[in-house]
Image (cartoon, rainbow, N blue to C red; front, side, top):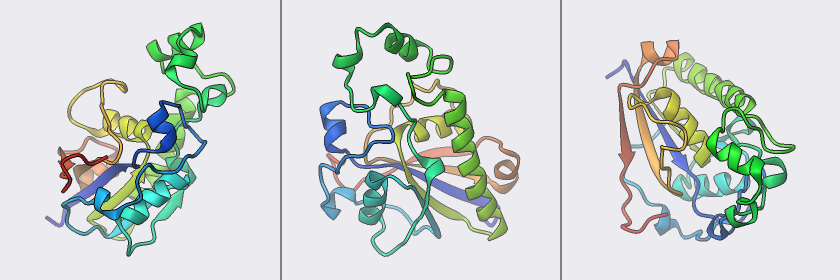
Length: 205
């Protein structure tokens, strides 16, 4: 077991803007619920904690891990959607560039937003920092609270199951544990297994 590292990825809880259907990106919005009982999971304790520096992730981390102080990283932010931030699908569906972006996320950039390649480079930078700290400090269990797009990207990169970015369905307030052996983690390889962190609430998130 000394060779095993568990990295848990939690998506922040549902926000008021998410409920409306708006693209948040680097904007922020309060959580629909800040009741601790809505953020109860069954997991063994983690040793280190990280989160996006956006408030919806910071608040979710406080609800999930009230006795911990996570390291906040800007690298773990959601994609910057530029001019589309705050808008809904209904408001954007007749925009040809938006429809092209949905069909070809990796080639089309939102106006005044962040390209997929820049988004990926940013997340990779944050991931390297986290994994270096894991390996340097001989840590075996880490939790990260971040955004749906970040979780999708990391699962697309590291999960054994091959899925496209949009094919990963990541619900608000859910968690996934990626289990790595240290050699794979050090070399940027795939995790050996992936499991959902079970919620103690039937209608969580």
